[in-house]
Length: 208
Image 1 (tube, rainbow, N blue to C red):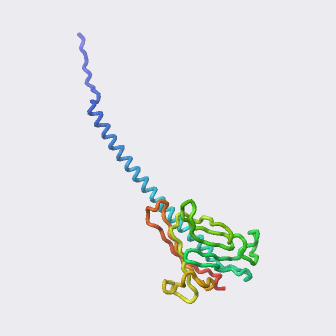
Image 2 (cartoon, rainbow, N blue to C red; image 1 turned 135 degrees about the vertical axis):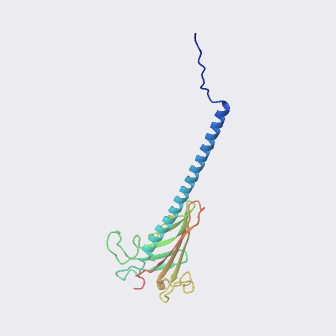
Image 3 (cartoon, one colour; image 1 turned 30 degrees about the vertical axis):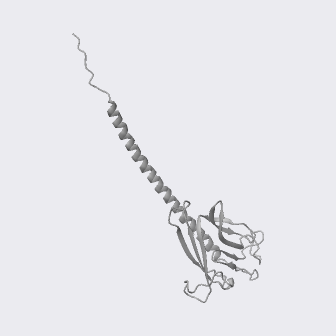
């Protein structure tokens, strides 16, 4: 006598399959949302870091070069601050020869001896620009710079504040002894709080 075995392993019903798919989609949506949120947080942090680095690099470069304003070892190059306004500065120094490889040559007409810092717009982006000679075009130092401000004092004050600040633009740049630089950078999309740096520079060669 033969007995037929009954198969007790049943498959998923359509309802069970739909429920499983729905749960899977919910989990997938939650994971996707978490990933997108983490990605946005990462992008935001990256923009903020870039903004801060831009401002610090720009301030470091300006401070280093402005501190050298008026460097004139021969005393014959007539180096110093040429013009000083609230948003730009032009200064000269004698650090090399015509070839740019030798010692100072008693003039300020060589590359990187007549320097100007100011803001300009290129490709729709406001940038901090640097000119290396009086006839050069602006070269970008940092992008997404919201503002650049200079303030000036002579050597008659010991405390630097609004009440002792010289009027801007300074009538006689030769009297400048202390320069305050304030630079404000922003993120590329402008969605974060701008970052502001302020530094006081005392060009040691201006008093000579």
